[in-house]
Image (cartoon, rainbow, N blue to C red; front, side, top):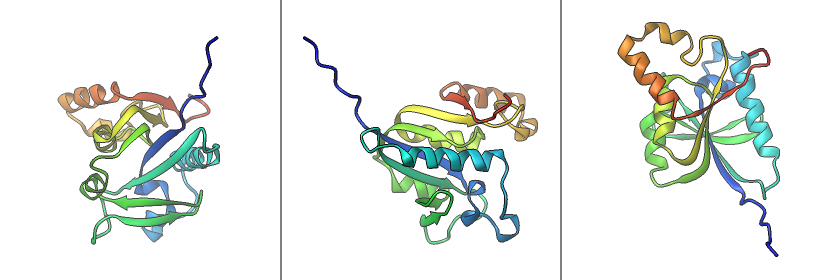
Length: 168
């Protein structure tokens, strides 16, 4: 007789951006968020509510390319949901987790800068959330050259893309 083993609990890393949390945004931009901000926070809440035998650990990396902490990566408590995340630049966050391995890496968006960083993290599966009709590049895709668009598309193809929108 064969014995079925329950699947092993997963270690998950969520790669988000400073735009996803009021705690890492400039004070003038804080307040009710867009669908992307709400989707990222809902994803975190869902992961944190899972039993430990399903999701063992959730790491939150908050990528900031505009105004990262000056003294290196900074632990920050985000209130929706209550979770300690590590906020910093690409270099700061990458140096903090050089040998970490996760079962799943989930990107909060498909910006090339965010996908480039997440693709370097060691994970068995890489996922990314889509949020709008400008898939997969968003409005910033209009500012890319044809070659950059091809490279971005190739990068997107290395991720499993998930729709975070109710109407897509």
